[in-house]
Amino acid sequence: MTLRPIQPADAMDLVPFFQESDMIRLLGLPGPRDEGFLRNLIQSASEDPGAVYDTIEYDGSVVGYAFLDHIDISHHHATETGVMVGPRELWDRKLGRAAFGTLLEFGFDVLHLHRASLAVLEENTRAIRSYEALGFRHEGRRSEALLLEEGWEDALLMGVIDRELNRIAVAEAVEAVVNFSRTQEI
Image (cartoon, rainbow, N blue to C red; front, top):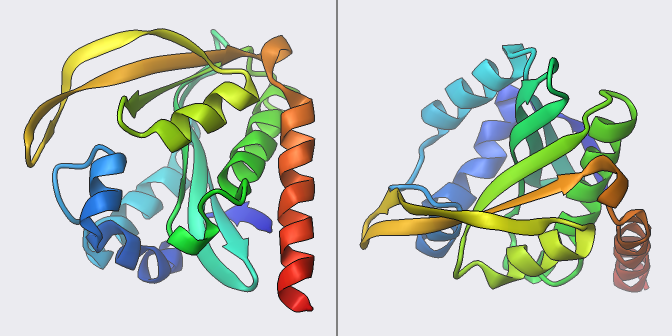
């Protein structure tokens, strides 16, 4: 697994994930996203001093991204954070946890953030378990926060304080990814 700053050219590799209805729903998007939209979004994010978006590469392919956004330096807080891993065969391999945890460590250790927050659909139990393992706590609910194809959906609010980040879970997830990679090479 490699994390590197996201680039507009990554849009081409990410767009297939933004065409899948299940992924679109889990990300809380109102519909599919095309390459042009993603390219513009990535360009904007890469120029924003209050955002850190990293591409997740695995086995030489772009498989997702992790981000810290809406960074408020004066309050040491990233109010919008998260991770997306596209290929289903990589789900439940702790790749997202490893990537997001590594980015959170960067945010806390290098950017000196004190807090990170996120919103997630209640039905995205895989993501919620991963966030909880990293030390995120449930902080509330935003009623009817997302308008999806099926109608309005609530978003669960979660947050983690720098000292509560479960760095052991990050290290274990990175180790699990390394071990999984080794088994694939054999």
